[in-house]
Amino acid sequence: MELNVDIVSAEGEIYSGMADMVFASAEMGEVGIAPRHAPLLTRLKAGEVRVKHGGDEQSFFVSGGVLEVQPYQVTVMADTAARAADLDEAAALEAKKRAEEAIAQQHSDVDLALAQAELAEAAARLHLLQKLKSKR
Amino acid sequence: MAVGKEIKSKIGSVKNTQKITKAMEMVAASKMRKAQDRQAAATPYAERIRRTIGHLAQANPDYKHPFLMERPVKRVGIIVVSTDRGLCGGLNINMFRKALGEYRSAKDAGAEVDLMIVGSKGMSFFKRIGGNIVSEITGLGDTPHLDQLIGPVKVLLDKYRDGELDKVVLIHNRFVNTMTQSPVVEQLLPVVPVKDEGLLDNWDYIYEPSAEDLLDGILMRYVEAQVYGAVAENVACEMAARMIAMKSASDNAGQIIEDLQLEYNKARQAAITQELAEIVGGAAAV
Image (cartoon, each protein chain N blue to C red):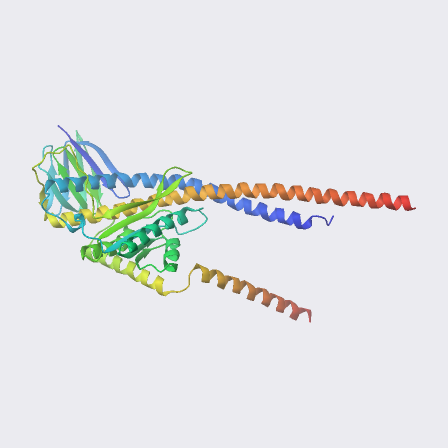
């Protein structure tokens, strides 16, 4: 009896294969999972996930995530970035602020195009003036 | 010969434009492949997390997380995924049309709409129509990362959790193939769990720490993963659309060059004929 192990992150699959035993650092402490483990759902701390298959052992670093255990299936959903409530909060506030600023700023693409046209005209006038000056 | 000098310079300028559009076409083609790989890499995570949510819903059907509960819809959150840059054909416009339809139908049903916008094209469009934009992210570039999306998505998730929003939908372009990208609307919240038939009834997880905490984290990651997947797919769509747009622009430039060349030859021929006629006429007069 072997375990089916999937380690995935949002931006890519990290490992997929069979294993005799999986070790991970869960939030409440290190867990070792053998086949026919009871269903378990836990958060992971930043740390190592070790996959033992036959004689060899592979190790992966995860910065956190969620571990789901079914009797013959272990799924590690790894985070791609360090997560913390206050970090997320700061990012959310920033996104909100950006949206407010963008709305407050009245220049849209149309205004920009208009400004560019005006600038081009002004530059052309200046050029002409300089030409006239140098002729004199 | 002074004849056709204008036409000559026109041909030169069209040729220059053609060079640029050809280069853009090739750049978009190579970027498209990479973007498709990134999109494919995002799918296993979304699938696994969807499966876990299905398991969870099956394991304890009594506990209802707010993210799983249907409520009467008084306020809708719409996430619109657009591109940052233009020159990609009708990609954004088609998607905006779909988004606007969704926006209007929500308003017609008496619901308010909050918007989250990805990409500056979407920003300028929805600013113009006066939508209530609550969060935005622009400048993600060709290689978007999940952590850039956490903040903007959290704004909507928090609103949903607080009962300010009753439904969240995601509107983005689906990559059908290189020639076709079609806008789609997906419901993000409330989450509709899929059942795994292979599982027995009457079992539950051991939760560490509490079930609510875990479910909250998982559902949050699920929504983020969905949005990330949409953004990654949108980059592939953008590149494909730009490739096609630039290809047809190059073809059109070639056609214009051909026409101009023909006109130039005609003008040159006319000038020569006239000169000959003048010489012949002059000789006859002598």
